[in-house]
Image (cartoon, rainbow, N blue to C red; front, side, top):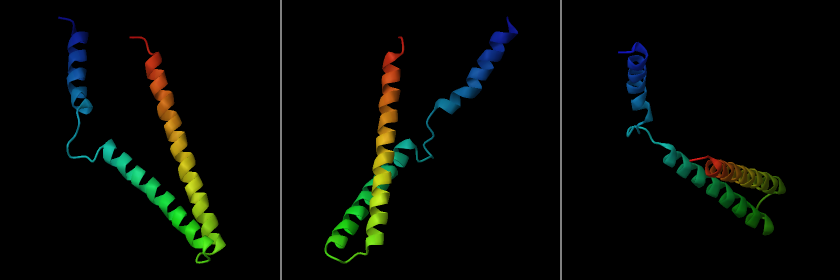
Length: 96
């Protein structure tokens, strides 16, 4: 029996639990869900501030700040979307 194959089997057995899902952690889905909620809340806040500024209930500084936050949120979402599409295209190009 080759000692290298035995060592490889032991290493595989020790690494195997790392690939299994841990039910005690929140997971990526909950993180994404919270990110989407934060994104929607930022856009909603910007929209409310813009509406308040149109009728004279918000100062211009608050409007500029809300618009800047909304712009940053949209740019971040577009960048993440582009990275996801790029990763998907890269997976499609992989040989089977």
